[in-house]
Image 1 (cartoon, rainbow, N blue to C red):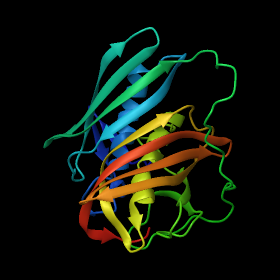
Image 2: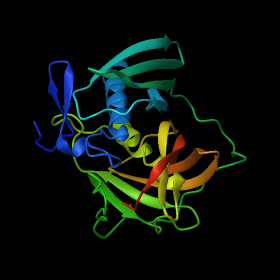
Image 3: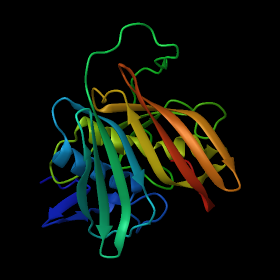
Length: 258
């Protein structure tokens, strides 16, 4: 068992480690870990050769203190070309998050050119040390390819350092699910900090990341009346692999730069 894992199994419960906290409060679990736990549970129980994870929607509707969590999954639909599985994440206080995954049957790629194709970005893989946090030090490696909160598309590279549960290796799907939560701070940050906290995120994938690096590029933000939506494109060194969309609500106290 790794001493640096975010969670340790204790019966049916997953007990969080100290570094599982989020940036908004020292006694609050980080929402990205809940998405990772949902992805892990659904993959362990409902994955099948020939089926590819195409979508993961994570609803983060209740802040959770640093207490043990449980994850339960159900199979909502199992067809010839589509499988839909749900996950519910709970603590002693009740349900704190839920997720739904769509798995699609792989097949022959259609011939011909697409009318619209997302281009590969021009950011090389990082070569220097990752950044260090100010108000909160991220428990993963983070490289900023653009200035934080500057006008224009924000770009980062991410790499997980620690296992999610015990000493289990991170799978590509779980790695993508963990990275996808960064869509909110990247797309919703203003020049004076992050003033929105996300309520959910939806990750869509054409393929899984091919290594431990995941790049994220903000490609859109809209907000009005304290409600925001943001979108990003996910990359790995081989090219773009998917998208993520988030919704967020205004938070009175802005979060400064990571």
